[in-house]
Length: 58
Figure 1 (cartoon, rainbow, N blue to C red):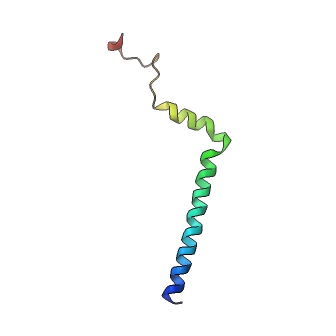
Figure 2 (figure 1 turned 180 degrees about the horizontal axis):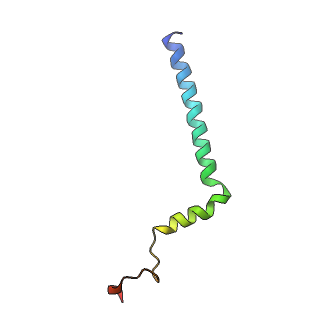
Figure 3 (figure 1 turned 90 degrees about the horizontal axis):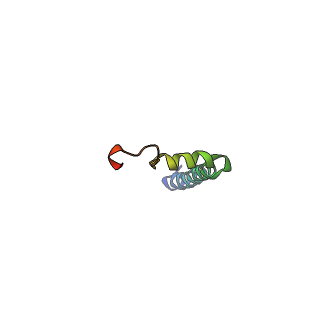
């Protein structure tokens, strides 16, 4: 195999692998069953004002 052939194979395989990885990530992120977990994760960094209000605020 020549260097040019190996470069073409590597570029083609790399493109296919990265596109496949991207599609898997997108499918896992946007599947409907993941919505509840994503909402929980998004809200976990927000303080719950009623439950976590510091004493010096009152």
